[in-house]
Amino acid sequence: MKFVEKIYSVVIPTMWKSNRILSLLTILENSKYTKEIILIDNNPNEKPVLPKLSKLIYYTENKNIFVNPAWNKGFELSKYNLILCNDDIEIPNIDDVLYLISYSDYDFIGISFEESKELKILDIENFPNSGYGSFIYVKNYIKIPEEYKIYKGDCILFENSKKRGILYNPSLIGERSVTLKSDPELYDLARKDLLLYREKKIN
Image 1 (spheres, one colour):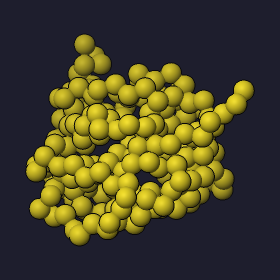
Image 2 (cartoon, helix red, strand yellow):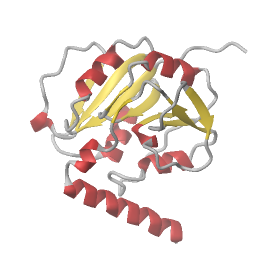
Image 3 (cartoon, rainbow, N blue to C red):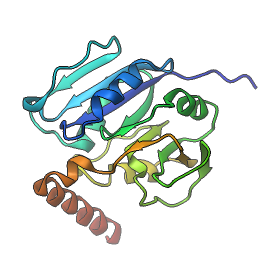
Image 4 (cartoon, helix red, strand yellow):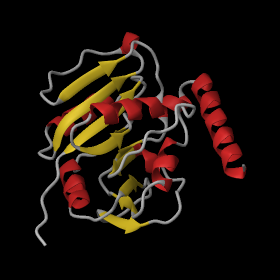
């Protein structure tokens, strides 16, 4: 069977709370596997001067539409294989990562923040609590219900995918949930998403 290397659209919602975002954009610009970088600006008043990048597609509604709706919008705008990415990480070996994803047969892949000595993807059955949603490959995207603003979008996509994997990457740099930790109101909204999800599961 002949495999064809894939090219990707990378969707990044941001509120400019992380100092890694500009470096991340440059890494993605220089990747031979990324075709477009769709930046969803949820806080345009804080937007820095952006570098001139040929792959960058800038989108804003001049307000915070929150992460899950931003993912939905990014999917609508995308033309290629979909990656959802946080703005608080850097992946210097992005070409190795996307090459590995291209030659795998997974429908859904998230990342782990656990230390690893090698770049690899392993099967996973249950949604992990490991920063998994910070970088996701989604083969078959479904629209996340609008009532979920911050939390559980990644979990809903996970549940609607068949073969699921987790990516271990020794070159991953960054933190988890920098934006969420910076704003108590966002954290409160995320808790409401969690309660809503639990309630729907019970019913």
